[in-house]
Every structure is written in C-alpha cells, then in structure tokens.
Length: 284
Length: 307
Image (cartoon, rainbow over all chains, first blue to last red; front, side):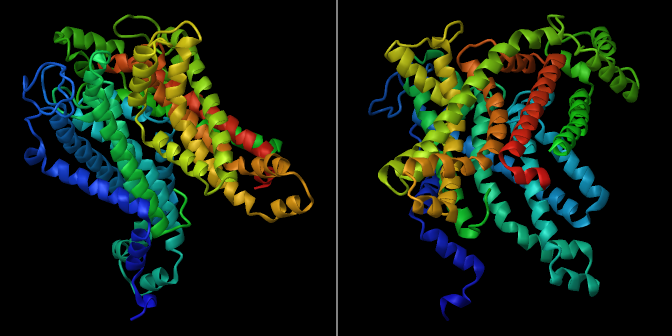
C-alpha cells in the first residue's frame, strides 16, 4: 500500500513527526508530564517539609535549586508544582472545551433563536478583556484553586464556541448530512457521527494552545494571591511567596518562573506544529 | 462610508446593554446569599447582613433592582465602596490616569517594537537574524509577565541600581512596567507582521514595483508594509484588551497605584461595588478601543466599507 492509502490521521502524524521543533517540544512535554506523575519518586524532599536546609540557602549539591525562607527544597517544590499547574491547566481546558463544543455544536446546528442567544451570550463574555473576566468570576466565587480553574475555564469558552459554530455551519451543508436527514437519522446522531468529526481538528489545536494560556492565567491568579493558596507548591504561588525576598534569594523565584516559561513554550511550539500538521490553512 | 460608521456605532448599543446586564447580574451569580457571603470573612451578625442586603437593594424585585442600577449609571452613580464608603466613580477617576498612561505607553512600545522587528524578520527571511528574532518572539509569548518583571527588577534595580523597583512619579518609574507590559504584545505583533509581510511580498504588485526599478526600501515601506499592516490593526485592538488586563499584574509587582491593583484589593475584600465599577469601566473602554480600531480599518482598507 502506497502513501496515498494512508488515513488522514496517519498523514497528519507523519507531517507532525517531520517537524523537528514540534518533536523537541513534545519530548520536553513528555518529560514534564512524567516528572509531574512520578513527583514522589523523583523529588529529593517532601515539598512541604520545612528545615531541609538553611532558610534561603543558595543552590548547592544537596539542594540544586536552593531552599526557600522556611528551608523547603525549591527543586522538590518545582517538581510538585508542575503536578498542580499541569493538572489544573488540563482541567480548565477540558471544562472549557466540553462546554464550548456543546454550545457551538448546538448553536451552529439548530441555528435560529438558539444560535442568537448562545452567540450573544458569548459576545457578552468577550466584552471583558484578558484576565478581567477571570478576575470578575473569582470575585464572585472567592479566591482558591478550584475557583481559579473554573474562572479560567469559563473565560475560554467563547473561543471554542465561536470556532466550533463556524465549522458546524459549513459542515452541515455537506450532502451526507442531507442524506442522513433524508433517511431519518436522529439529530443527536447526525451531530455526533457526521458533524462533530469536522470540528475535531480545530478543537484539538485550540485545546493544545489553550493549555499554555491556562497555565499562564492560573499562575497569574495565584501570583496575585487569588488562586492556589500557600503552602501548596504551585509555580505562580511560589513566585508570589518569593518576591518578598527577591534581593536576598533570586533562586526562589527564578526556577519556578523558568518552569512556567519552558512549559508554556513547549506547549506553544507543539501546538504550532500540530496546527501546521492538521490543517495548514487554519489561522488560529 | 458614513453608513458603515453609523452601523458600527449602532452595534455598540446592544453590546453596552449586555455589559451592564452582566455587571449588574454579578451580585446574583454569587452562590447563596450575596450579603452573607460578602460579610462572611468578618463574621458579621445577622442584622449587619440584613442592613447590607438593603444597602445593596437586594430586597427589591429583580426588575426594580436593574432599573435602579441603570438609573444610577445614567446619572454617573456606580454606588460606593462597602468599606471606605467612597463613591466608586471617584475611586475610578483617581486611579484611571496611571493605568491608562501605562497601557498607552505599553501599546505604543509594542507597536513600534513589534512592527520594526516583524518587518526585519520578513525582509531577512530564513536568515540567522530572522531565526533569532522569532525565537525571541516565542519567548515573549511564553514568558509570564510577572516573572519577566521580577527578572528585570533583579537586573536593573537590585543588580545595576539604574532604575527604581517600584512606585511612581518620574519617567524612570515608567520604564520597567512599560517594558514588562509591552513585551508580550510586541511579540504577538512581530509574529503577525512577519507572516503578513511574507504573504504580501509574494504578491504580483511587489514584483511589478521591483521591475519598475524602485529601490528596495521604497518597495518595502510604501508597497509592502502598508498592505501588511491591515490585519495588524485588528490585533492591536485585541492586544490593548489583554494589555489592560495585564496592568493588574504589572501594577501589583511594581507597587503602582492604579485600577488593576485597586481591583485585586477589592476582590480580596469582597468589595463588590468597586469590582463591578472597574469591570464595567474596563469593558466600556475595551468596547471603545475596538470601535476606533474598526473605524480605522475602514479608512485603511476601502473594501471594508462596501462589504
């Protein structure tokens, strides 16, 4: 069998693996996820244990990333922090993509008043720029990790809804959708079997890039004291705690900051590669 | 042309209505009794909760509450802070100058830096300078602003002692916050200008311009840049919104008194009228910026007007 017979997914995978940058990013991501999953095995100390070394001790052999004010090991906290930051980012993305896809699918497929109501609601959410929507939501629910996830999740919904609706509008014009209607296939089945596959590629790309966005936003909320609360090891919170003694101990803020940047950069690079591989015409 | 402007301005009315509805509804989206939740931290007595409920007008029917809210808005009354009792409009008025100045400086920096670097990267496409600039742009997009802020403070304030690490007053106080706030937007704009420019440089009229014997500078500046800036204008509006959101973090790190910082404090103290007022103000400013961007768009690209 020649290359012509390969499935679209396989072709996309081949295009993706030919991109060196995306592959490097994927490798970095796999390492980060493995570190997060096996945090108890790889981290040298308990992230919450105080007095593992001197307070604000610089990087040395026993503490590669140094220690914080309470003598907690910064390396262990960065590793465990990855667990929290990655998990909450995935949770936020999963939440916004599921809600966004359902709303976009319904609005695009049924049209009429439902479309108007859903899309105007999305316009209302989009009227609050950047992190302000998340801030407004946190102000209602109160600070905390779960609420930060919910806030960041909700503020990402409009992006999915708009993209999915656009794809659905063009997908439902396909002849096979008409044919399915004609033979009496129920709406729910048409949506899932015939329309949904058309929106999967853009949604996967949005979700990938959305992880980077969610990490940045949740860390920002934590940095402002509105997300994860101390002593939980989370990258944003670690920066929040460390900025008080920036002059004395650069390592307390530098390593979690570096961790955020490397993760977000890897996710962005992988997302870019994925976009080019799945659909080069997409401009998301 | 006028018809387009008229239509575009008209669209703002339902958006404005939606914004007020959402900001008004914020109180009612609080799970449970809003008055009790707001006072939960201070362990207030039931009488205090009842008083707050009356103060917020929560004991009235919903339609009446919204009518009262809108009537207040039209008179320029956004309520008062629950703690300092100062009118919200006064709080916004006092703090908006610093925030707007910071946001405007940052967007200017982002446009100048982003367009220049984007054009350079496109002109020297696939060279080492293109690779370097685009790697920098990826860092700019991925770097959390609060970390960049801490690094710059570490370098320029703690290490070299050239610039103040926080506060406000002189132009020196503006440099680091502007850099931090503008860096991310500059990276986004540079990436967009580069890809847009590369697309334009492939067009036939560029080949014609070169064939006419025009110098490369004139081809780039007069023919390519002008056309490649069209998509950039829209993104500038969008970026301004993100930038406005970014002031929250920047003001906190650099200890600047502005709307963002006031908003964070108000959220921590559950001072809802202040949060509502600032959210409303920001949304309205964002709406106006996008309106201006869309109108500029019509001037730059005549096709829009007839679309």
